[in-house]
Length: 79
Image (tube, rainbow, N blue to C red; front, side):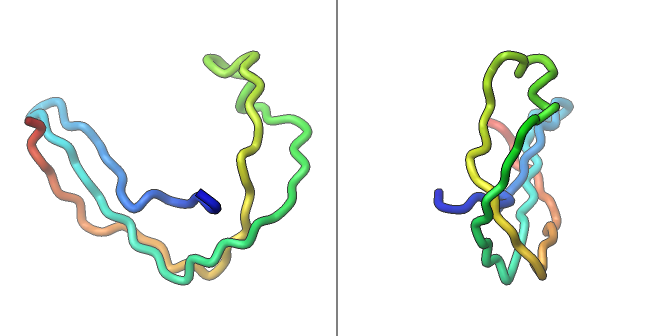
């Protein structure tokens, strides 16, 4: 994708009843602008399981005034 951003849904597994909880996101005014960044060190990759993996920045963008929120979740049985 040219720009990545929040996924339209998030999921969670409920082991008690073997179902998925789905929650949809909503957003408006999503107009990302690419930006250049210089990341000299990313301490996140100093921890397991990422040590020595050589991660790299895929993209960076700037957004502002985004009306973003989550809808009501619902459950769906796993077949």
